[in-house]
Image (tube, rainbow, N blue to C red; front, side, top):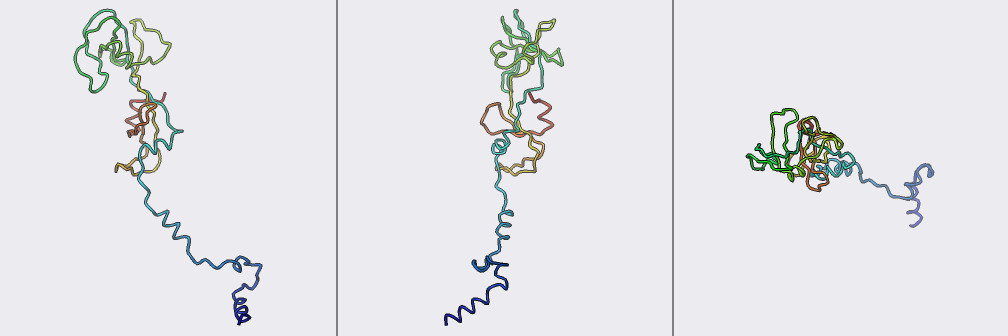
Length: 197
C-alpha cells in the first residue's frame, strides 16, 4: 500500500527534476497575488493636511519678505498725520508725533504719508539695506518686518481633510519659525506681494 502511494507520488514529479526542483519541495501556490496588490493601489488615498504637505517638503521651503517699500524719517517736531495702519484692525485716525517718532511715506507715491510712534516703528519696520544712508531729505527705505516660510506646490491636485483641494502652483506659507498650520494662496497673488529673501 505504501509502495503504491509512493509510485503515485512520482507521477507528480516533473520530467526533469533539475528543471523545477522547487516544485518538488513546495506545494503549488494557486493564490493570485495581483488582485491583492491591485486592491491596495486602487484604494482611495487618505486626505492630507496642509501641515503634512508643508513639513514633507521642508527642504524646498524658502523665506519671503514683503515687496512693498516705504520711506521712513525720524522727526524732531510735532505734527499731525494719519496713523500708519500697523494691522487691519488698527484704529484709524490722526496721530500727533513727538520726538523720535517717525514719518512714513509710500516709496512709489510720496504724497501718501503717515505718522507712527517710535516704539511701533521699531516693531513694524526693518531697513531694506542694513548699511544704507539717509537721502537728502533724511529718508531711508524700509519694509515691514514680516518674514514668511513658503513652499510652492507644483504637484497633482490633492484632496485635503478640510474638503478643499490643493492645486498646482499654490503657495503654502506661515510666519517664519512658526509651527502653525500653513495658509494657501495662488502663485500670482502671493508673488505680487512677497519676494524670496
